[in-house]
Image 1 (cartoon, rainbow, N blue to C red):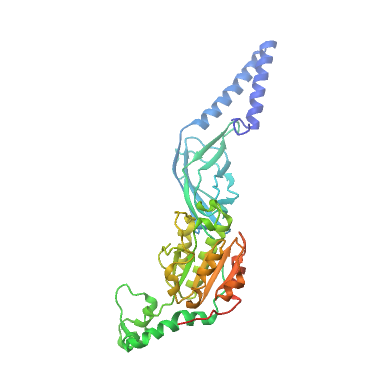
Image 2 (cartoon, rainbow, N blue to C red):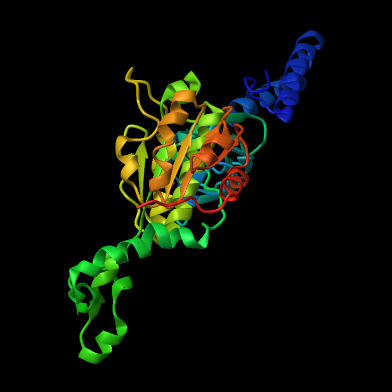
Length: 413
């Protein structure tokens, strides 16, 4: 009721006083009291008219830091409001409409505004903090402002600007480093062995070409030849890893077909992007694929942690899918993968365990994380997997530690 009533407490009192004075003046025949009642009524009407004068909003813009929000992480929001009014207004209250993907205290005191007829009135800056609550792309806004006339009699609520699309990415959990020998067996050592038959030409510096990464500059050769030289062999010795996110809806609940709706699938997506971030940090070039082999994003180059963050933002809208086909748990080509392989899946069946057995022995570091299902971890480990389970909304870092606790898997050529 309070939101519909346009008068403040002071205005309500003035209205009651005006009505009482009018009734008493009519019955008692007191002209002065009637004059007073009319004066109060005119004052209320003038206050309402002052608020109804045309407003012009030049701009309402929002800036988020960081630009992409993340589940359970803080994001700072800054609003710049260019608002002009024909008459000055008293201070009020503002509220920014938060979507389901964010939670926080998005309200505060709105400063008084001067007359727009005068020059020099700049935009109003408002700030607040929010926390990512649900993965997806959400509409933040509009801004709601409640203000009063200069006398504080009439209240007006109005919206300013439109909405701003906010991307809430899955949370990237800081995972423990890989075992030291895994990088050698699955990456640099293996690729170096492939180079032995290619001759020494691949191991020397060559002149810099447009498009070469500055990280590949061979400084010693550059100083010796007085021209930019790059390491040829570094382009060919980048270790590769694969992260498989099983999106088959039959291993999740039907809610997983919408971002942020299924807790188990949300944990799996967080585990996926966290594994990518760890592998990229370790220097691996990472492919992220679906269980049917579909590439879910462009490969992320080793060491490019900014690209790993960008991949997490791209995964803000990834969902489970069901196209009626019997998809595998891992792609058919997975049996040929020699670098680390991380599989993130849901509840597994006995047939899935059989299919997994032929993959682990080819990978330098096969890791499987099962979310929300009862899995024979012992059987998977005997088959060569670093396996662990975690509950929906469980601790991804703890599951990663539990999986790697077994040590290195056996590698066969």
